[in-house]
Image (cartoon, rainbow, N blue to C red):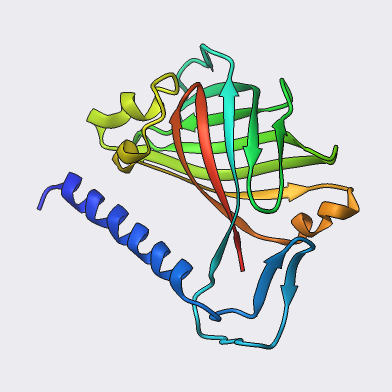
Length: 204
């Protein structure tokens, strides 16, 4: 079995596992509504894996070309400055604040990208939310150019060719969205249409 096939099998197993988690009902006693995540003893199972609840999809636009440092012993730093964008979901929507962040990604010698993302979201009702996260992205060598090509048309069906996952955290002083300060989130992302496209889920 080749390394590439092993990688595909691992990614496939992860996607199937995530789908199984989302599909299980009442595994965790937490429900996300308009007022945030609520805890309840109903349906609680301490041994069940956590479920995911869709928060929003963010379509981020980047300034291009990216900035790039000279190679270092631990890799090469590539900086994508945020130009703007939008986000929308069942619990919050709005815009990505223009020129208010970047992705400081470090490409390790093994080709894996170590993500360090920070930018600001502004909701439709004028709440400001600081978003920051760490993550990883990688692909087979022959798919690396495709994965990093943010200018290609959005291609959800082709995003299996690379791994692009992260763990976002949020900070805000707005009481309407203060529940975001107290959740753990994960994202499943892809590239295209001028930047990254992040689908963000709350861990229940």
